Image 1 (cartoon, rainbow, N blue to C red):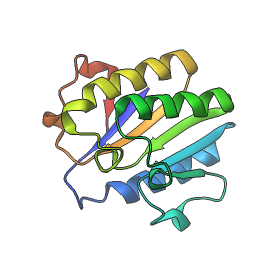
Image 2 (image 1 turned 30 degrees about the vertical axis):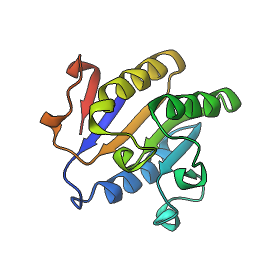
Image 3 (image 1 turned 60 degrees about the horizontal axis):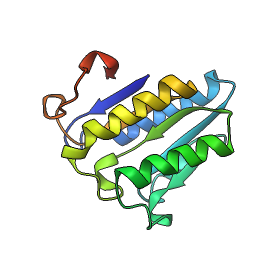
Length: 139
């Protein structure tokens, strides 16, 4: 399942994502990953969550690179159950018009590998044009 947390910049999405990740790590038996743009707020995450800062990976510059990065994580660790991606539009030069293709890929990964995704996007729900809105859970 791909869960989408939408809203304008400054609406508290990051804090909601951190709280959801801290709750998920208590509930699941596998690993929880939290991907963000920088090292800010990393101290707010539970010690059991693997925090990944994309600023440490400057070669990842687009949706294709980002998708490959996620596949690499999953191939190296089959115990990953939940991946949080905070502020996707701030990362890897991903723009709003690329989001539908990216979300479709995440949905395919979720279905094939049993990984749940939580994605925060600084945009209104109506601005995200996906082919099958029923395939996503808007929070």
